[in-house]
Length: 170
Image (cartoon, rainbow, N blue to C red; front, side):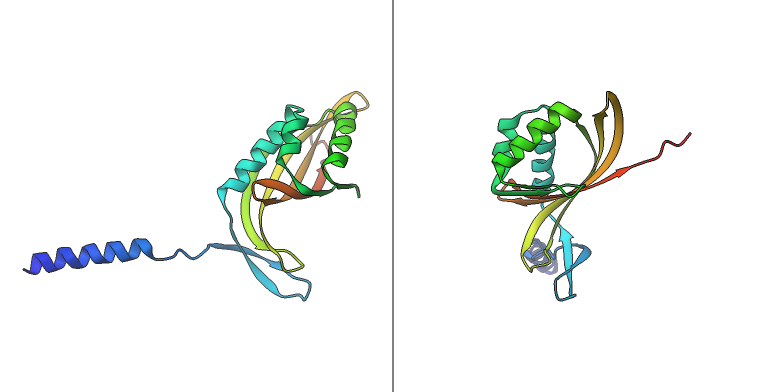
């Protein structure tokens, strides 16, 4: 009888522990417009998958795939003050940039996260580091970019691009 009770108790413990909600893992914080810190948690892996497909489409110059991965409310802030508003403007920007700079991205790392924006909206983001090769005046140069991308319903809605050029170390 004791064995039966022990087995029954163990079974109930396992069953109820599997149904217990998992608390989101806090990985950092953001600060809203009022200066209040709010938690940033580990986000869904699907955002990194969307991001990889998005970068692959850029490297393949697949404008149709890029447009399909952009949200209807797409916008982007570039590292030199550029602002792109809308899918058509993004297509125009990329067409010219592909022709003049021939960028190629290599993803170095990617972090999916969920957090509150400065205006209080909660969303899923991917923050990703890249090594980017650009052609400048006939010479290939390497720059490093960190891009924060807001992913909504499997689509890229907003980008913030930060870029660093490193000195040659010999």
